[in-house]
Structure formats: structure tokens, C-alpha cells
Image (tube, rainbow, N blue to C red; front, side, top):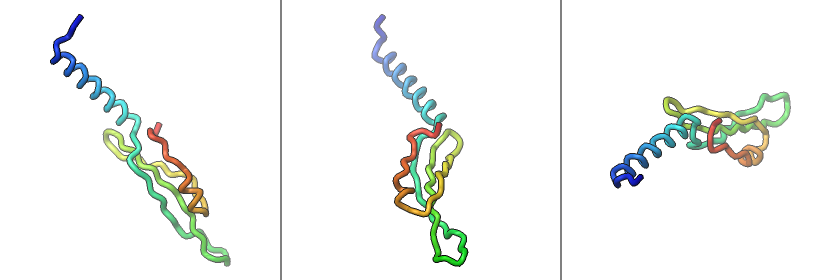
Length: 86
């Protein structure tokens, strides 16, 4: 069965729409940031705790995923956020 060229355009557009809905339902990665906070002091020199936040775009919201905190900013930078949130 041969579809006319308009049929292929409509079918392709529908496929793109379904794919976009699926990706936004799962949540697509849109960015990350590393935040530092001073650690509680107990008489020692001041240390900082670093946490990486990954942000994901969904249909109705932007989700934030926090990673574990470390005292070394290089360990935090090595963590790679997933492409999809679930």
C-alpha cells in the first residue's frame, strides 16, 4: 500500500509527537550545578560540603535530583547525571 506524500508527512509528524511525549514523560536532562555549603565546625578549620544537583524537564515541572555530598569538589564533578530521570 502506498501512501500519498501528505500521508507520510502526517504519519511522521505523529511519530515525532509520540516520541516527544515519551521523552518528556521520562524527564530529559537539562542541566546541573554544584553547590557548596560550609560543613559544621568542631574546632577544626572550615570545610565545605559539595552537592551536585541534576535538573530534568517533564511535561508540567522541572525535577531536581541531588547526589550524595562530599568534601572534595573533584569527586562531585566526576558524577555524571543520567540522560533520563527514570
